[in-house]
Image 1 (cartoon, one colour):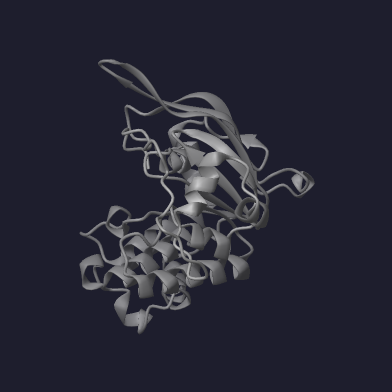
Image 2: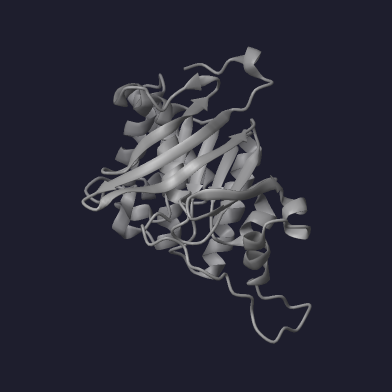
Length: 289
């Protein structure tokens, strides 16, 4: 699926009226209800909201990784002008690996513990590029170097459990970048890491994004991360979009009461408050982060 220069004026990713349902014995739950957004080439869109807001389900739907019984029940997802939500699994898998990369919050879900990181990287490169096996291994080492793995030529033969949590996440980022995708979806990429490592990983993602010109869909509950990295923000609550727009506008003049409460719940060092704002009614208990 080659990128089409003639489509430069349209969004790279366009989600229209997406609805995700979870059938159950007591009926069907609507986890994501009629949401729409777009991402342009090289743009960063932050998606924020409480746990259960539907953020991760939305990201999984884009790349065709919804786990049953979750299903897309309505709407369309277009990538580079082409509808992809109705593609057969193999065609979508090729797009997912070649044009859309994914960074999950838990690197152990992305890495096979039985294979060395080198094997996992080279197999992904061989699948989605025309490189030879020797060329793929060389590229794998280069990727590990780019994401800050020391002694990459030696560590390429290591297994995932031989890396620290922060280093495993760097390997996952390398895996997502194997085919130089035009869009990366990062779903809470630093949740499992300590604060110092979180900052390093976020800086790494941002630096690589700028260097490679990638678009980024950043899913997070951390408003500080959105303020630092995103150009636009989409605020989700209970499976719906309550507000979206430029980061500065949303942060300085939020219109929706939920967005106001979300921002009000963030501690500030420049003012004293008697108590933090409450978000009120909690998000649904579907487990749709």
